[in-house]
Image 1 (cartoon, rainbow over the protein chains, first blue to last red):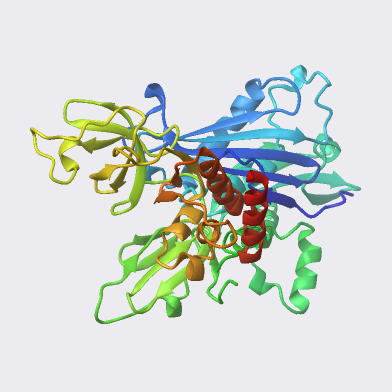
Image 2 (cartoon, chains in turn purple, cyan; image 1 turned 30 degrees about the horizontal axis):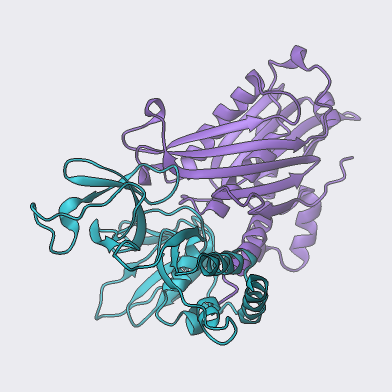
Length: 253
Length: 235
């Protein structure tokens, strides 16, 4: 059973970047910096919108095809929520440095390079969103993301929120979901064997984790809900992190 | 301390009761808000929602480091180079240069246009109106530019920055606590402060006092202590 730890975050950790965040959850620690809108290189320039550039750096070694794949997924996800049309011909650069992960990065993983690292994606997305908020980049909405694994244990199907690397190895299928703050599904990546019904179940679980808003969490229902989901309340976490940042910024009011 | 107005995150719905409604003026939206026709007002930044029922305006108050130009802001721009009709100037690092027409300065004509050298500082409004060069007139003291956060620059620009913005460092440095240092400042909304003084030491002390007040988030008492310490170290 995974010991689900509460997520932790710190904003503005890099003093010279426009925005930065450090986030750790489920064994992953990621630091992100955001610069932008800045001048784009000629070849990256888009006439009507900003170019979103995502760079993922692994905890050890240099990035390879796995990181490029993660970058392309994150790029298309984040470009949906940033108001890129506000900044034509400019660049918004997001650099994500993985600092810590539950896997051993020094083991040669070349053989499994074709597979996507699902468990790290929620941490990357969450860190990027926090850093964007810290930079004050105009956004359409915020995002919350989670990874869910579906496993067969003792003949019964079981969904695991925030799976560990061991869970993923033994799981039937692994899924990553991201929802906007308006409860819209923005990102769904899946891997493994699963039926449509199973996918619906998993999606429902992920939605509960991501879209659980605070006002609904009162009284008895909340206790039962929490047991159901078995994950942290991501939206409330995002809100409380931003609240402490805004309070610190506006201490003079 | 923060008033009871709520924290908003991008994409959240703003409670309709908080939107000011006045028959006299049209509703004005400030930074951090966008209007999606016909009638949705959605925040685009995380911060505190501020409304002004008298002016019928609302905006999001938040702090950031990167300046996005907007009309009417008074900014400090640094001249990069001059082209035929324009000066190209930088407002913040790594952004594309802004153009400032030669004729945008007061009483400038085709024959008498201001001559500015690369590296010089000009005050300007966001409508590309030149307000004039800084620290170059004969007899004016030399100075230095310091970078501060945008929120701090806005606080410095408030008409009553001590009471409303909670910044008293400049008054303290020039007053009793600072032993009456003589200096002048120019603040731009792009997060740049020019400090000029006859003495280079004063420039450094004032600049450091501003930057440390900004980064440390100092209150009035903290600022007083900082000023005393800096002035003591200076002597």
